[in-house]
Image 1 (tube, rainbow, N blue to C red):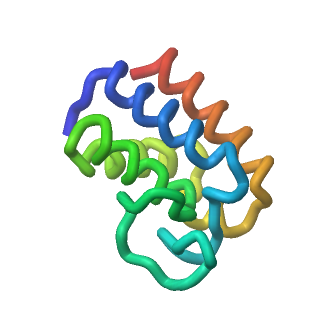
Image 2: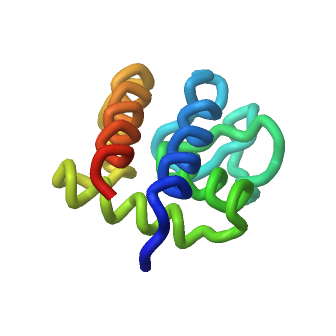
Length: 111
């Protein structure tokens, strides 16, 4: 599926803005409630999400199309050779956010 660069970059920007706050980030789960219990609703306020969850949350909120997140996840794996979920779950918060920023810049340049 093709999405214009602007849609991809805006989704990444929104995802970064959300999980920059460590209170909104998690590992080992797509989404958790603020108290770390199981939660299935990405749209709830103050949920904790992994990097992929942040793409999904942002794609739904900004573009009403989760396929934007799928496209970003595929591009991530092609670029870095590891799924965004595995990267999220094997690195600390600061590294994940820094890599998301790097990915945003690469997406701005190449699309």
